[in-house]
Length: 619
Image (cartoon, rainbow, N blue to C red; front, side, top):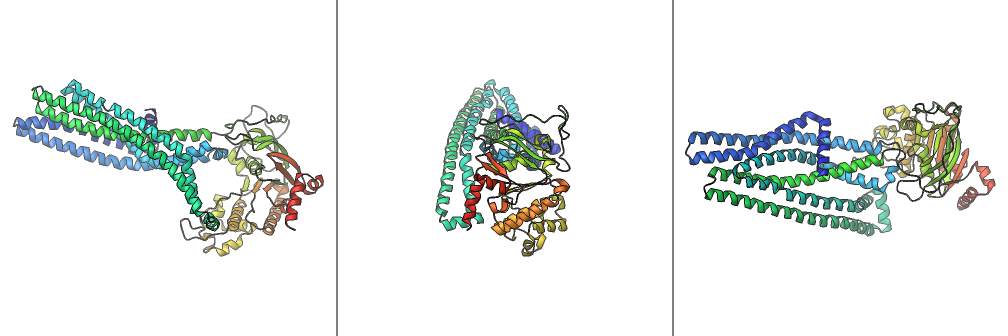
């Protein structure tokens, strides 16, 4: 019952915030309609007695009253439906926006790597389409409770024992609660298989992966794996629904026994002369209504229980995206270094208000002090006790084997996730003290898993700075800097041409072209202090990548004295990274060595080994 109360309260509050006029209109109309139903039984009982007593005038008036109540019952419910139907749609949109804000509104993004978060999000999005039905059930539940209360009073007026008929609704309700819990538990148990099934359907129907599946002859294997996941899901849910149906059927059988007993009592009273024919008609009418009410009540309770679980999962999403500090430190890591003295002009004295804006320009640079990071639920940290300094105006390349922690380190420097321990400072200011939005507004990024916005070409690039989406000159300048002007010529309609085939006959691009547009989107940022590129040219050939990085390094040099911009990039091609001012080599999440290309080659360490192996491969 707690989940039912939770869902009802949540939906009523949401409806009040969304459109209180529609909410109150629906409540009033439904109340009138629901109360009219048992009153019809009262009028029919009186009509029966008047007809038997041959009181024609009273019988006609009562017949008109019954007809009027029937009209109220039908029309009030109809107009109430119009109000709560529209309100339900508005609530669904509002709740969808709320979930999107929760998921994307936190300072970090490490919650996306938390299996518990992914499971909760999957189940929440599955049930968002049922918000309207849940609101309808909430309002109808209130009406049914009023109906049952009035029905109980009317039945007691005939025979006190008849109060047991409404009370007989409790066993079906309790069994229905148990039945719904079975279904909810099955949904949770099936969540992983649902995700696997969805993923494989997407993989099998996406052009970029479908061609690989065809060529590898893996179609049957993928289909078989998807069917196995779907079969596991349907098997769990099927068993749960069968068990749920049996429990609900048991509850209905108990109520049917009570229903039969009520009819027996009133007929026996009539035979003994203790009740008149009108009372028999009243009890028969009310008993039928209670039967309908209980049947409807079970469905409403099931819907609200499911919605209650959804509300709880939304709270789980809130908790998992609550901000920094939710992931405990894992493994033996060194404590953060002591804070710089208060004489440092870039630091505020202790106890003052946290800094909210980034510096206008970088004077000293970015510093990592004993930084470690572990993803939620992970057994080991992926970054371990990393300390380094990136001077203002410099370029830093991150290299290392796969899984060394390069992308995670870039995410932290960009402010997308907080260190588990240690700190990252910008001109001496801890990133935790900076308003995330302000720091991110001064960061231009392109990740290896870049977004492919199947929108107009101008929108695809302009989303790098939405305010300039209609500024053709700025968009073309970014495209030129990314070496992507040729794409504009190939796309029908130029900047106003559609990209992709998801919802229109747009131009399909190659992986390299999509990535080049992503780079142009990155270069739309004005006055960045940090340009972070995580494998930005993975889809380009070696010569194109080298040319791209030369442009980036030259661009960084142009603004080195003006804003002290730092360029941070990750690449597996060592011929590219040698142009960086500094090269940081990561291994197993630790900073293994750091320096310029020549110094690292002279040290004859890990970097020299990796560089030599790759250089030999190109000979």
